[in-house]
Amino acid sequence: MLDSLDRPIILTASAKINLALHVTGRRNDGYHTLESLVVFADFGDRISVKRAAKDNFSMSGRFGDGLPSNATNLALRARDALRAAFPDRVTPVSIHLEKHLPVASGIGGGSSDAAAVLNALARLWALDVDVDRLAAIGLPLGADIPMCLHAQPLVARGVGDEIERIAAFPHLPLVLANCGASISTPQVFANLNKRDNPPLPALTAMQSVDDVCAYLRATHNHLFEATRALTPEIDHTVTVLTQTSPRLVRMSGSGGTCFAIYDSDDEAQAAAASVRRQHPGWFVVATHSAMEGN
Ligand code: C5P
Image 1 (tube, rainbow, N blue to C red):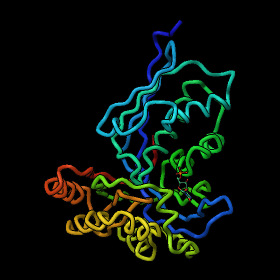
Image 2 (image 1 turned 90 degrees about the vertical axis):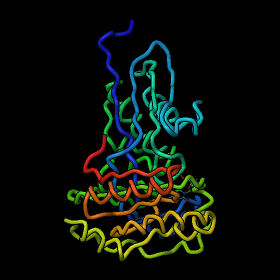
Image 3 (image 1 turned 180 degrees about the vertical axis):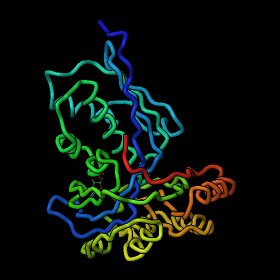
Image 4 (image 1 turned 90 degrees about the horizontal axis):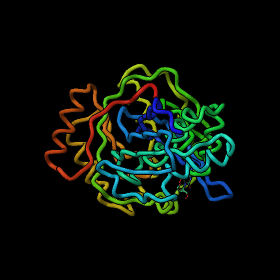
């Protein structure tokens, strides 16, 4: 019998933004070692889970059509991985994914969905798990899943799985823009000309947008040139954002989403409105960095 008092658990799967991404080497298994300064936006997909008579999965939202709804979907792979780890504690669940983030776009949509499913189901099933255990369960599904489980400002090292949380970080007004270019992350990594770059500079205390931008100016996204070579449209996204006079423009992850940083939320809103007017078909959102996820 279903408990009629069962309510869905609804979590935001926040967009992940690589403010800086240094590629520092390559492991024997082919994965690259990275150092990345990451924040999460106050914007993302929404995951809703609740008990059900039998398993089911549905999607909605602007980008809901771009994904398979079968067991290859990262949300369902996360459910199945958690079930495999706790086979005696699980009941059927209904999962709904509201997809607001573009697919395969460098802002961790799939990884963030998987992380939100892990968090939501751990609560629904009352599992005794901490974030490290969930990260170990999620990592084989995607290198960004551990950082998405933390969903707060952090530095990620290793293949993205070694997390150093940043306790204090300023409110960062942002615009995210994506022209719709489709990008394959494995192809971008395969296309790198240089893999042994220096690590990130030592973290400084960051209390203002100025502090963050000063730090970021000494850093890079080492995937940018490889993405550009495969997808020259990225240059246009950078140019359009640059024309809104932000403090800094850069690509996140392997692209194609680029972000711009502003001094205020009002400036970010105005810039987003201007980019949207010029390119009504693009994904454009004004947001800001969030201190805590979910
Ligand atoms: O783990 P995820 O699905 O995000 O990675 C997609 C692909 O990107 C991997 O199969 C790998 O080719 C590449 N990758 C990498 N080094 C990383 C993360 C991803 O080479 N640290």
